[in-house]
Length: 274
Image (tube, rainbow, N blue to C red; front, side, top):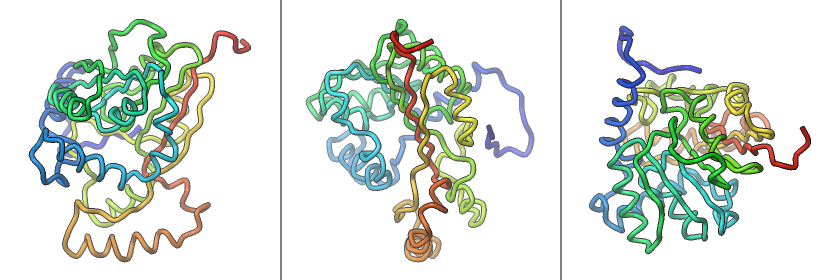
């Protein structure tokens, strides 16, 4: 794994201090806030975040059928403002959401309330879940493991709270991706590059991270779409030249270079062969 560190010198800190820094960072940084125009916490605010997220992540509804989990107990680790959790709940899943930071949980409560939906929402460290073993049918952690102190510890906790045969759906950042290369070339930092922890992974490292699971399928995704975050000449060059040019490249060539590595990991069932 690669830890992206911006200071010119490395200062040793304890895991507890790092955890506090992560909590403080995500209390202060609402994901995709820069694209919202409506008051924070309003119904329109959440609608804007949803529209932007699923424009940027067009692949997500094609890989994750939110309606597939109707009636299932679903936990989202690192639920943030509850954008994806709302979609699961709206489709009939019995949802629980946890986040290390308090502000995201407050926003998630407001989001669910605006949509007339119910959820069990708690401030909780995903590396130390307080749920009993085998509590959930599905655990979803999209873009979370790369920002935590110990991704391996979080992965073990996800495995523990899943029932036998349960499904984990996780996303991490791909170290060898088009976006990381473009960031280096253009010297435009990645979103949340200033987070206290930001790790990237290879497919092999993600496979190893999910070693406790019986079956793991990894799908590279998240290819260029037009950005609303960057303006000026760089924004125009990216939207007009790079996005259009990239989409002309052979899919087989660019497929491994997706910025997101989506993993679908199945826990061993009670009746699976030893």
